[in-house]
Length: 147
Ligand code: HEM
Image (cartoon, rainbow, N blue to C red):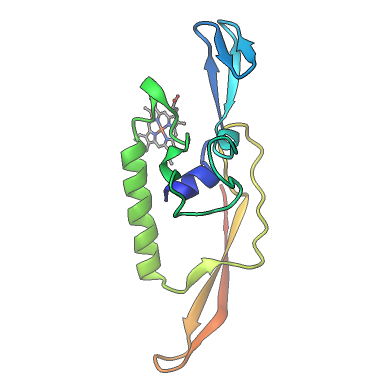
């Protein structure tokens, strides 16, 4: 789950106002500046993650993402969000074992600087023809549209 949060964070950008001058690399941002913090870009920073564009749940630094922020305002709901997602995904996999993303799925997101929401999600369910026959791939395709 941590690698999913790093690779494709639910919140891509977050607005902040600097309370004092801050130097990031070679740039000094003055106090009182409105900043859009690009969490998604920070999570792909090659100085922080080796081979950052590769999805690797076993990377050693998997928990170093900024998807729940950082510091005193670190997301207060991070534990709950992880718990909810873990329960939802494992219950879904138990209830519909043949559920997987459709190969026809082309990623496209709603226009939004902060939140990442799919326009639609195509899912395919492998349905076994009978208990002693192999699984029939592509048995059904369902489309879930974001509201
Ligand atoms: C995948 C789900 C979630 C993501 C990606 C997320 C992400 C974030 C981020 C990036 C921040 C800003 C942190 C910062 O400024 O450094 C934040 C703050 C916050 N989040 Fe979440 N969040 C999630 C779920 C939740 C849930 C489930 C709750 C409550 C039940 C929650 C409550 C809060 C609150 C109250 C803050 C403000 C904390 C503060 O300003 O001190 N979040 N979250």
